[in-house]
Image (tube, rainbow, N blue to C red; front, side, top):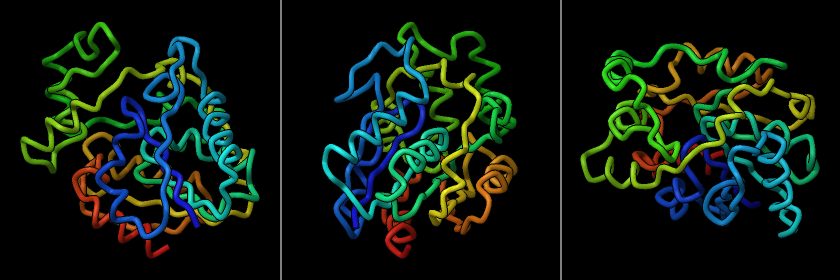
Amino acid sequence: MTYVLVHGGGFAGSCWDEIRPFLGEPSHAVDLPGRGATPRDLATVTVADFVDSVAEYIIERDLSDVTLVGHSMAGLTLPGVAEVVPTRIRRLVFVSCVVPPPGTPLLEVLGELSPHAKEVAERIGDRMLDGHGVMHRDLAGAMFCNDMDEDLVASTLARQVPEAVGVLSEPSDLTGLRRPIPRTYIRLLQDAAISLEVQNRMIDNLGDAQVLDLDAAHMAMISRPKELAELINAL
């Protein structure tokens, strides 16, 4: 068995660095197109490119019996990978993922931020993204790092990268979820970016999913790597 780890928006495969030593099987942390080891023009990148990149990564390395773990915006990618390489996937694991209903863009399903993150967003105004498309560090800290000390916040924010914002408006395709692949959703109880209300709606969109809870914020793979790994290993 092998873990393939798919990062969410605004980060690259390096966001999984802390958790990988705790995983009980070999793991691969992919860089989606437009970052890290997979350079691309982010202005042209689509969800289909995300899907093809992960599927090709799995095929090129002849990986099988894969537990495919996605975080946050990777909820757009995992169903597509399940459709392209279904026989290679053992289980889908959604860590506080956004999984919009079929045909619905991600932007239409996100709920309100936590009160603190909302207050920071209002203060920052139109400076939410810098000239390179990276989220303002104050807002990113409020949304992603509310269970971290200062050093871990700094380490996390240093890993931010620009995102392909066009994918936020693409209609969701959940065709791959028709495949009889077991799926698990890990709710993050302190998540200030994707509320419990939104996480519960995403769980409903998955169909028959196992649900596990972790008392952590959005970047649990960094802030609570051992605890998150224990949940994933137990699957």
